[in-house]
Length: 442
Image (cartoon, rainbow, N blue to C red; front, side, top):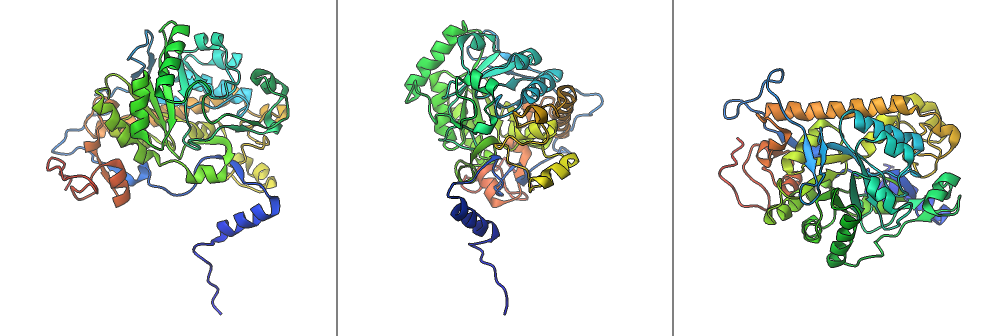
């Protein structure tokens, strides 16, 4: 008799049903979406040849600098590279990890971001440019830290869980984390899914005004949204007065949330960018008034270049930064095996048993991470992805990465073509759009 597994009830689905029946609780994990969705890998650049003229890499410059917050702030955030580090909290990460991210970002002239739970002194000291997240929970929030920040990011949503709140399990709430958050140590913490101060864009406008007055109109105010309805969310964030919109796709990471949330809520980063850009263009804000920062699954310089070509001004990395720190390293294979996992698959960031010393508050595990060495790895990674993006931009004949544009891209699949709004490779066809004769690709 032939054994025929079910396509619907496949091995992972059966295992999850069995786990749920055994434990009586939904699955929680970190990392981000692991399912296959259309992504930047489904796009290709059209390098220059005769109809376009490439730039010589050793003699002709290609700029990578970006200014964030030019709309209202007296001191916009000026970065040397268009790659920033996303918000990840002290609590979710160890103090050494937060310090290393700050030092690594500073080495290459970019910013890092606090996360839920407030600002640690070592993070502030290590970070030349630090974005302070203002979250629904307000854990660790105080006006003095707002004034010590170089920008403020109001977090409305997160790509891994738009519409959901944060989660920090008790085993990671040490005495220090608890003190910063005004919470009891060792008790599970769940953050609110929405801010208590507003129910709509009019209230958000008042909150942004309040933050500007607290910081004397000196620093930019970002608004971060999880990608679900990017056109309307971007338009409303601009209307409320945001200097920068941060758009986080469903491939964005998280330290802990429900598995069902990670894999089934939100839309892919690739699909989120064009509607957000469209909203900015209609408001006359694209590339001139309000900057767009994209995050969610950014790994390589090619991803950076593709996000910018689609209309982003900069990108943020979270999971990739943790991997650069040392997460999921093959050197820890024995430790992962003892936990029933392996390098490349470890996602139990919520448990606090991270052998790399990154997503833990255990003093012995946290001490495994050398912040100086880890900072250098982060800096190396950021430098490489920037060089890769420059290489692609030069090949397309661009003297600045911001000169990349959708016209430089084609899509490998019908799905990615429709989402990114660029032609299917070898055709001039964009599914769902009228044919533009100027976009000849073959």
